[in-house]
Amino acid sequence: MVFEQTFIMIKPDGVQRGFIGKILSRFEEKGLKFLAMKLITIDDETARRHYEEHLGKPFYDGLVEYITSGPVLVAVLAGDEAISIVRKLVGATDPKDALCGTIRGDLAIDIGRNVIHASDSPASATREIELYFDEAEILRYSRIDEEWLYEA
Ligand SMILES: Nc1ncnc2c1ncn2[C@@H]1O[C@H](COP(=O)(O)OP(=O)(O)O)[C@@H](O)[C@H]1O
Ligand SMILES: [Mg+2]
Image (cartoon, rainbow, N blue to C red; front, side, top):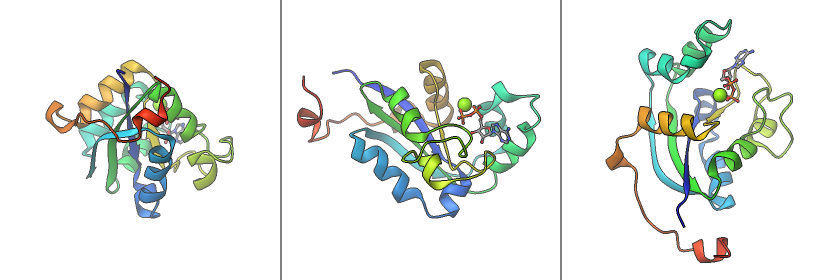
């Protein structure tokens, strides 16, 4: 089976609040496979490229400042329909609207401190994976539970 790939980032507040393990477990338990992962501090230029669709919005400068304010964990995940599954696990942008059981619904309150980013489309997944990872950093392997996770 050829899996879809998506990109996630545990934002600086998620790292500082000690949620790395908790957040990664949600994806792991769902059955999604990590193909790449690293802790980095994002520079200003990368942050501006990452969020270029929001250039000109009132929250843009604050968002760039937030995302560059400390270490983040970036990762590539794979699975059948991984992009939409991950967005559902992450929950609504504003944690006040995010359903309980989602990462943002359970772990955050403020839209400006919503602990995690996830790609919202195939185009953004490709763009964001390329922004943070070299091709050689993305591993290819089978997870031992795949034959139990998928019917065929
Ligand atoms: N009104 C806002 N005030 C402060 N920060 C915001 C606001 N809207 C969005 N953001 C920040 O910008 C990020 C990107 O926004 P958006 O792409 O709309 O959401 P998502 O992260 O769910 O894809 C959000 O995750 C959040 O950190
Ligand atoms: Mg977005």
